[in-house]
Length: 468
Image (cartoon, rainbow, N blue to C red; front, side, top):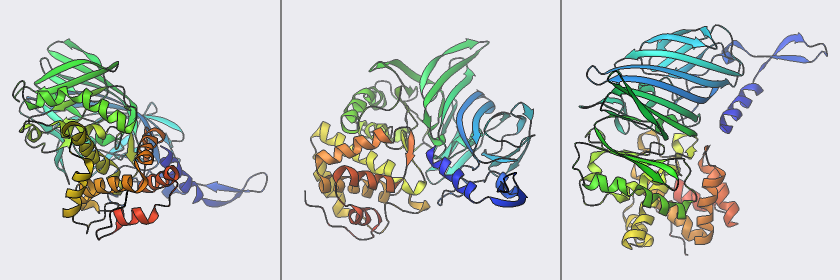
């Protein structure tokens, strides 16, 4: 949110000066017409049309009804936002379901679709807080991204809405970039007998006329790509952990009592261990969802309730991937990236959490895991700026984890774990970039670390291992 305010300040600094004067004969700033249209991208250098400019969303209230037999989705979203510059027009990311009703601040608004952009023209210029109400319906389409097929996917027994770096725009109109985090209410109506799972605190379900509505609330700010909906036949286990709701689910088609059930049952234990490393768990609920659709060949840290593809449950133990995705609750979800080039701040630390978990459970020293990866690493792609085609590459995950452990060796354990816990505390529910982490590391350690980070994050040759 703070980054968005700085963007608004830059916009204000570029205002033109009118020939008119005030009663004090001071120039009166006038917003040029071109500045009154929210940009169709938030300014990410890797993905220029992700997100949108000119406003800042505070809350999404999403109501959807989904019929698996026809793949028909009917939705309504109420968006509470604030204009960061006077707006005569603005965009939302949305992939094309027809809009049947559009209202802005109580008055009908015009809409048109421009590719993956929904362009909205309100009846009056917007300044300050405003509300958008949109009704829509149709058959959602998947989104192809670097990670693979994602977005809203129809399945044999329901649907899965999932993906990174974008997916939300396939099922609701949204400002789809981590810079604009917001809170959420979600109400999902599905045929009776189906589960409808999502983020945040479960608020119960009601059934009427053969349909069941499942309600969810995420009160911590959430990046749009971290939202999820999973609909279908699931074994749902509800309970509590540390006085917070815990809800896990496993696809009914996966073997009952198998690796997936065991992995979901370990969620609380893994989260408790990670608290000792990273500081207090940042959300009001725990959970996880194991899906059976083979198109989901990844796991994703959907906020408070990660989703795991079936390939992770073919071995005897999947707790390592639980550690990875739960680590993201601190690194990526609570502290979100201010741009996709900084994704190592998510994946480097989540991969390092795997190493910490392996040391904790199997007594495999983190140092030996570091040594193995260090010997075989390809250093030609810089971790801190891998390029849009490499945001899910080993340069981000494995080399990112090497950089994390190298920092530990450089500054020592006391300073290192203080850095991690200070980072997750000071940046909680906000966004950050690499420069912020470097500055914090220098502040906590009392050392100049610019050359260190230049070598480990941005160099293209193997850096020397620090001497502990």
